[in-house]
Length: 58
Image (cartoon, rainbow, N blue to C red; front, side, top):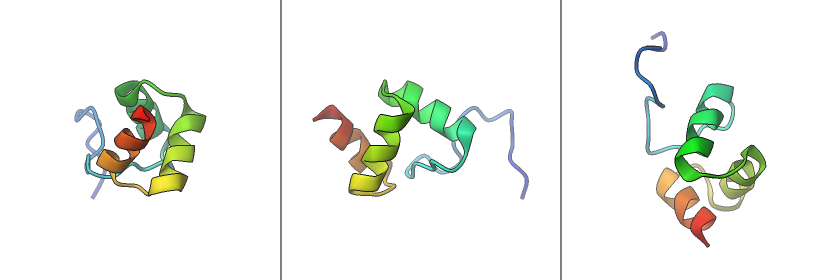
């Protein structure tokens, strides 16, 4: 299935995908962090958005 580019945001908002540049941009804006901080958080706690968000708020 092709991406629906009219839908502004990840299709699965429960998971952070750091392999898609547009998703990295979306998540960094949502969490107010840098790309490096986002990738480090995903590496530390996994891809679940709630875990990444909690890690970044520490």
